[in-house]
Image (tube, rainbow, N blue to C red):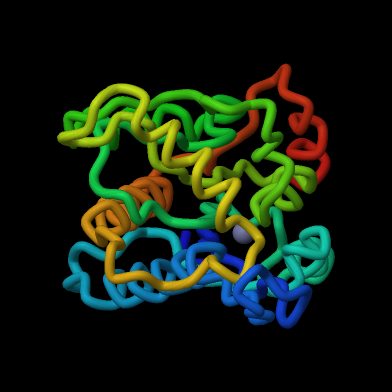
Amino acid sequence: MKNQYVVYSAHWDHLGIGQPDRRGDTIYNGAVDNASGVASVIEIAEAFTKLPPAERPRRSILFLIPTAEEQGLLGAEWYVRHPLVPLVRTAADINLDSMNILGTTRDFVPLGAERSSIENVAEAIAHERNMRVVHDPRPEQGSFYRSDHFPFARFGVPSISLKEGDTFDGRPAGWGERMFREYNTAHYHQPSDEYSDSWDFRGMIQEADIAFAIGRRIADLDQMPHFNPNDEFAQADRNRR
Ligand SMILES: [Zn+2]
């Protein structure tokens, strides 16, 4: 199984230099979107290297930091057309795009997991942490089609993009939704997507831990994940095998 791979992906690009905001700032830092995801993939890679030999997963792990996501997933699209490891031996992609900087939650969204057998893995990992898997709370955002896991899905590789849920520890109902809207209006794809001392890294650590656990579990499964027979990507999954 060593020649089969679980992929972790996080895009490193953002928007570069652009229109100034009200403060005259022209640098689009992309601290949340997606330096936070890149940092998490690097930490996950380090965590895998620190596992004692007896606990290392059966499959191998591949860490992918594609570019030009913001221009239309171009880096990931290029990767699936020129993969380092043939897609028939690619078990899954776990994508991280914009980590949770707001604190720990009691739920998480493994975006796209319900399309494939990854759903069982996500449910098991949630159960072990006394957490809940929730479906995409904002399907109107079309998030499944808007990050680097999507080209993998289109080429038949079961994939998810992990997002935090809306139920934050110590916060009232609706707080998470309000914070999402605030970020989306005030910082998303703007120069003000910057690091701030107000970030609560406990949420990011929790999210990276969940991503690590899901990938590790997939890497130990007897069978590679597969799309559900009726899913729109099931044919692509059959074609690559
Ligand atoms: Zn992004």
